[in-house]
Length: 122
Image 1 (cartoon, rainbow, N blue to C red):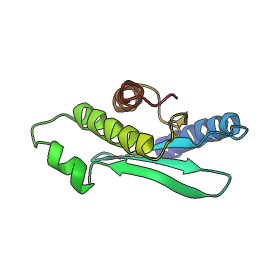
Image 2 (tube, one colour):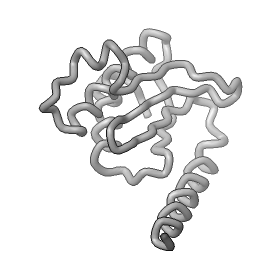
Image 3 (cartoon, rainbow, N blue to C red):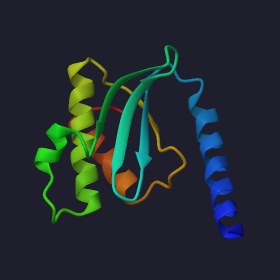
Image 4 (tube, helix red, strand yellow):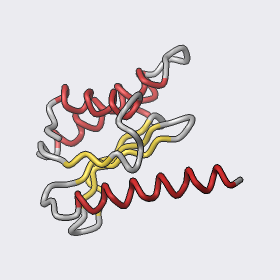
Protein backbone atom coordinates (compact mmCIF):
# COMPACT_ATOMS: atom_id res chain seq x y z
CA UNK A 1 0.00 0.00 0.00
CA UNK A 2 2.82 2.38 0.80
CA UNK A 3 4.41 1.66 -2.59
CA UNK A 4 1.17 2.64 -4.37
CA UNK A 5 1.07 5.93 -2.50
CA UNK A 6 4.66 6.66 -3.50
CA UNK A 7 3.86 5.93 -7.13
CA UNK A 8 0.78 8.18 -7.04
CA UNK A 9 2.79 11.01 -5.49
CA UNK A 10 5.50 10.62 -8.12
CA UNK A 11 2.93 10.75 -10.95
CA UNK A 12 1.17 13.77 -9.50
CA UNK A 13 4.50 15.56 -9.11
CA UNK A 14 5.31 14.87 -12.77
CA UNK A 15 1.85 16.07 -13.84
CA UNK A 16 2.24 19.29 -11.88
CA UNK A 17 5.63 19.96 -13.44
CA UNK A 18 4.32 19.36 -16.95
CA UNK A 19 1.20 21.50 -16.46
CA UNK A 20 3.33 24.37 -15.13
CA UNK A 21 5.45 24.33 -18.28
CA UNK A 22 2.41 24.21 -20.59
CA UNK A 23 0.36 26.88 -18.80
CA UNK A 24 1.86 29.81 -20.70
CA UNK A 25 1.24 28.35 -24.15
CA UNK A 26 -1.22 29.95 -26.57
CA UNK A 27 -1.62 26.73 -28.58
CA UNK A 28 -4.20 24.01 -27.84
CA UNK A 29 -3.03 21.13 -25.67
CA UNK A 30 -2.94 17.52 -26.90
CA UNK A 31 -3.64 15.57 -23.72
CA UNK A 32 -3.10 11.80 -23.53
CA UNK A 33 -4.66 9.42 -21.01
CA UNK A 34 -3.44 5.84 -20.95
CA UNK A 35 -5.13 2.97 -19.16
CA UNK A 36 -4.35 -0.75 -19.18
CA UNK A 37 -6.88 -1.41 -21.92
CA UNK A 38 -7.06 1.81 -23.91
CA UNK A 39 -5.64 5.13 -24.92
CA UNK A 40 -7.59 8.39 -25.08
CA UNK A 41 -6.45 11.62 -26.73
CA UNK A 42 -8.03 15.07 -26.60
CA UNK A 43 -7.07 18.43 -28.02
CA UNK A 44 -8.17 21.01 -25.48
CA UNK A 45 -8.40 24.80 -25.70
CA UNK A 46 -7.45 25.80 -22.15
CA UNK A 47 -8.48 29.44 -22.54
CA UNK A 48 -12.11 28.42 -23.16
CA UNK A 49 -12.01 25.09 -21.37
CA UNK A 50 -13.40 23.17 -24.35
CA UNK A 51 -12.41 19.94 -26.03
CA UNK A 52 -11.86 20.64 -29.71
CA UNK A 53 -11.03 17.15 -30.99
CA UNK A 54 -10.89 13.71 -29.41
CA UNK A 55 -10.09 10.13 -30.38
CA UNK A 56 -9.70 6.84 -28.57
CA UNK A 57 -9.56 3.15 -29.23
CA UNK A 58 -13.29 2.86 -28.46
CA UNK A 59 -14.42 5.27 -31.20
CA UNK A 60 -16.48 3.58 -33.90
CA UNK A 61 -14.25 4.79 -36.75
CA UNK A 62 -11.05 3.75 -35.00
CA UNK A 63 -12.47 0.43 -33.82
CA UNK A 64 -13.02 -0.57 -37.46
CA UNK A 65 -9.28 -0.31 -38.09
CA UNK A 66 -8.26 -2.33 -35.02
CA UNK A 67 -7.96 -6.11 -35.13
CA UNK A 68 -7.90 -8.32 -32.02
CA UNK A 69 -4.33 -9.50 -32.61
CA UNK A 70 -2.90 -5.95 -32.71
CA UNK A 71 -0.54 -4.87 -29.97
CA UNK A 72 -1.26 -1.83 -27.81
CA UNK A 73 1.45 0.21 -29.52
CA UNK A 74 -0.11 -0.43 -32.93
CA UNK A 75 -3.48 0.70 -31.59
CA UNK A 76 -1.83 3.86 -30.22
CA UNK A 77 -0.44 4.60 -33.66
CA UNK A 78 -3.91 4.34 -35.23
CA UNK A 79 -5.42 6.59 -32.54
CA UNK A 80 -2.64 9.15 -33.09
CA UNK A 81 -3.30 9.27 -36.83
CA UNK A 82 -7.04 9.60 -36.23
CA UNK A 83 -6.73 12.55 -33.84
CA UNK A 84 -4.28 14.29 -36.18
CA UNK A 85 -6.60 13.90 -39.17
CA UNK A 86 -9.54 15.25 -37.17
CA UNK A 87 -7.47 18.20 -35.94
CA UNK A 88 -6.25 19.08 -39.42
CA UNK A 89 -9.86 18.96 -40.64
CA UNK A 90 -10.64 21.70 -38.08
CA UNK A 91 -7.59 23.78 -39.12
CA UNK A 92 -5.55 22.95 -36.02
CA UNK A 93 -1.95 22.41 -37.05
CA UNK A 94 0.07 23.31 -33.92
CA UNK A 95 -0.46 21.77 -30.50
CA UNK A 96 1.43 21.37 -27.24
CA UNK A 97 1.96 17.72 -26.29
CA UNK A 98 0.81 16.93 -22.74
CA UNK A 99 1.83 13.40 -21.81
CA UNK A 100 -0.18 13.74 -18.57
CA UNK A 101 2.50 12.44 -16.22
CA UNK A 102 3.35 9.41 -18.32
CA UNK A 103 6.94 8.73 -19.23
CA UNK A 104 7.75 9.34 -22.91
CA UNK A 105 8.26 5.69 -23.91
CA UNK A 106 6.16 2.93 -25.39
CA UNK A 107 2.58 3.79 -26.33
CA UNK A 108 3.01 7.50 -25.53
CA UNK A 109 6.04 7.81 -27.80
CA UNK A 110 4.39 5.87 -30.64
CA UNK A 111 1.28 8.04 -30.40
CA UNK A 112 3.32 11.27 -30.49
CA UNK A 113 5.29 10.08 -33.50
CA UNK A 114 2.10 9.07 -35.33
CA UNK A 115 0.60 12.51 -34.67
CA UNK A 116 3.72 14.17 -36.07
CA UNK A 117 3.78 11.90 -39.12
CA UNK A 118 0.15 12.75 -39.87
CA UNK A 119 1.00 16.46 -40.05
CA UNK A 120 0.43 18.01 -36.63
CA UNK A 121 3.30 19.97 -35.12
CA UNK A 122 3.86 19.34 -31.44
